[in-house]
Image (cartoon, rainbow, N blue to C red):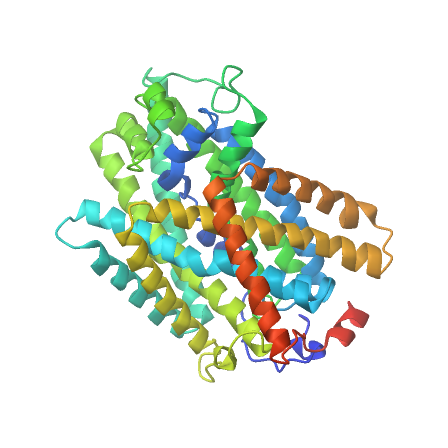
Length: 461
């Protein structure tokens, strides 16, 4: 039997209906198996052509993060992800700040996905403005999410199958093209190029590539809708990371070997975001380039943003029921067992930010930078929470799981954050300062952050 949230002082409201396959599909759809297609050029240029290496390091770094998530979800099987884990593992104020940091990720992710998809569809059908596509994607996903988590799981499963089919078509065409002598032929340079390799260069690219992996942690948001044991969440996260990582590495490696102008891409970057589709055109012709572009748009605008809205609404719900956000966000539909007000707010904010960022010339780049910074910062706190909760508070002697693994994960991510985009670092720190001011405001208003059932939760963890 899955743990009951009532032992932490909460009334069970979300419906437990998701099995391992549902969680795995959810994580894969959130990460999008074809996600690298949309940011391939940026990662390629940032990594000096070693795009596959950037994804390898990104996967390894997040495997350690997944291990820390698995440890904390065993102790605290609740919705809210790192917000709950840091709050209960270290202290409620730390949990608030961790939740605030990852809120930057979760609130902005749907906006980024909608915007990229809308821009891609506009380029395919120029007669329809970007804002129309954006509104359409938001409305569609909001209606589906209102219908309940089972409906969301069904839709995302169908979408995932479609993405995998497109990816298989690309890999088959790319393999045949390379066998025919097109592109640069087989080479290890996408994994390691001694002429361009530096650790600073590669880790800077990892800070971009890791955007494709964000979403595996969203599985933890469904802890209260998981009908298996707490360990099932950890297994699903690890499996989703492994499968997605293999797909990311394979497709970017093959695309790197088919880039029509490697020198130009390294020198000028990929401002139009078409580098992958240019490689697809070499592999199979214009039809394959169009297929990959449209598939990316639908995957980001429907499948990925659909599950992103689910994760964001659950984070808002978790923080609201602890009185750290407005109470109305904790309202749950009796009929569909979903946090309807949180879903609505997520949709409204996503639409507003998407429309604003579409107006800016650097909108997509700015959103990507902010999302990565928020996620990496929250993951750093997660690793610290594992060490503090198990090693310090509970005197655990499992040094591998509770010290070595989170320590390695923390070190890798810290290096990624240090080498991240400077603008992202500045804006991210501004967001954290706003979080500190908000926390101070809660204290001033007599609403010091407290987590329900904290004492009993600690004792039973």
